[in-house]
Image (cartoon, rainbow, N blue to C red; front, top):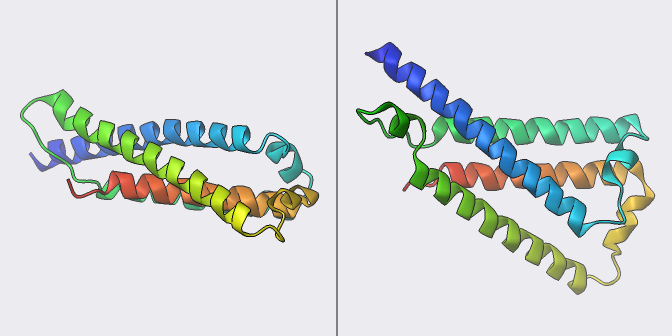
Length: 153
């Protein structure tokens, strides 16, 4: 019995992590839409420090998603599919992620408007600046997904 529960939990964790990866891809796509003048992938690749910072942000993102998937409430049912995929919970995760991302973008734009002497677009002047910016964004996505996954509902 314990092995069955462990296998179900591991399978569910993988399914949730893959779903969150899909959501993160959408989140990165939104970053590309929000900053069309910053060629993040090209600029980060120009400097090994920028690449290292990006990788660090990505690893933190992965850690947050896996931790959230591992610690998310796990309902056990008599049927296989509801034990693996709780569609109501996944809908809540997607809704929470979407609202949180929109709120984050709104607050980011508000901070940009309230600090006119700090030109946010200047980050593109340095590959390291772009690397730090994207790493921070990945950490934001990880935190949002972690929070969505671990909602105690």
